[in-house]
Image 1: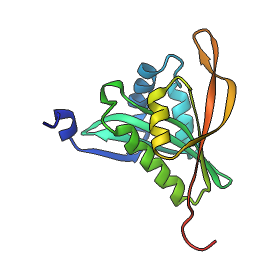
Image 2: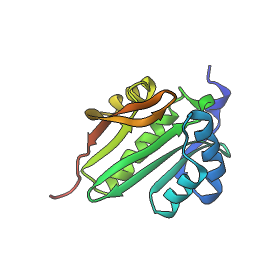
Image 3: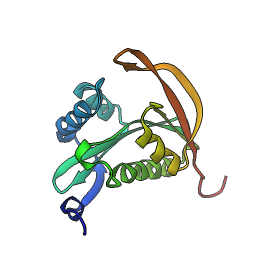
Image 4: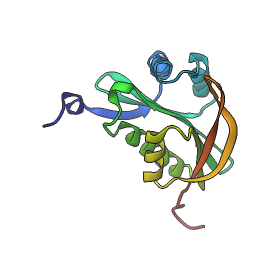
Length: 160
């Protein structure tokens, strides 16, 4: 039996200014130390590749990708809690990887909390590998938390 949530059409599209309130709400409800509305606005203004996952008419997830100097960095990727476990994070990640590939970057990087087992599982499934650790990278309730730095080497298409 297919759930009612999965029957509603889902698509990934570029983030618009009108999406910032929904994106900020998802972020705030997902993280104790969330990005502010202004940070998301600045990412849009800076020209980062900002996308949302739309479920029907509602924004239920987002991703932020920075591309520069032949490499790309996933700055943020999140799905609203009530829509997790449905493959939506993977859908956003696939779009991000495709955008990085299209931009002909060689390597895609990200930081993730070592305690975020669901995110780590998704990234490993997609071929990301741990390459480093950033000590005290994330703010935490009791001080700071390390970050694992992951990378994915992208195959370039066309002649070298």
